[in-house]
Image 1 (cartoon, rainbow, N blue to C red):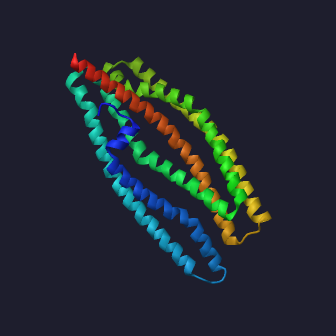
Image 2: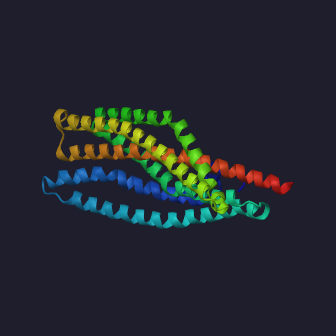
Image 3: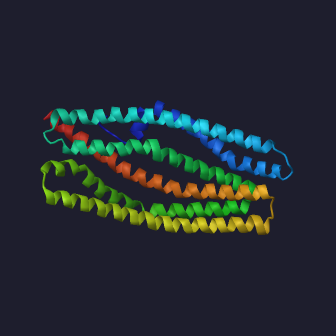
Length: 291
């Protein structure tokens, strides 16, 4: 695979990846029903009806079984994808390059790309599912709370769109350091090694500071949404205990989704930069081999 990108990986391994997403859809559909069924169970308990409780327990068992199956399958599917791509991008370098340190660095970075598909992408998908599903249920249970949630999602999205360029530049600098690590080690010089780790820590701190600022701004939107949901459902609508619980649970589910999704977005930017440099390195190795 000379050209590595998110889209080429998705196309080449569509079969294996699609299975993970089918299982993920089933799992998230069950999770979406969790708060609603629990609300039904609570309302049932107020009149000593246990059918809702039994239904909720059955749902929890189903969620557990599907989650275990997905994790067993994911580890094996994405492990095989890493093995195949890693072998492809390393063969040309081993056969034609005197300096293997860039290839070693790219092989290490490739693990982050595969981890993105195995971990961050399902998390992002689950977050989108949770956000959309929670908004739909909130619009059903309390339209004003759903409307405020939609506004909060748009505000949080704007924060990360405006941060895109900064996230990309910081990740590029950090990936430069990681790709050069093998060369620094092979040179066996103390000063370049110390500078390498100092630069790496500096970039990680810069990225962490940016993430902390974005998180703080995002959570302000979430706090306002939760406060409004409490006020609207309890003080204004005066809904039943079960419905209040369902509204607050979906609000919490929405909040978790809008805070997890940006992490997936940031990792997408980082891994897109990695796949770009892997592809560029592979093209250079092919050109040198042809000379």
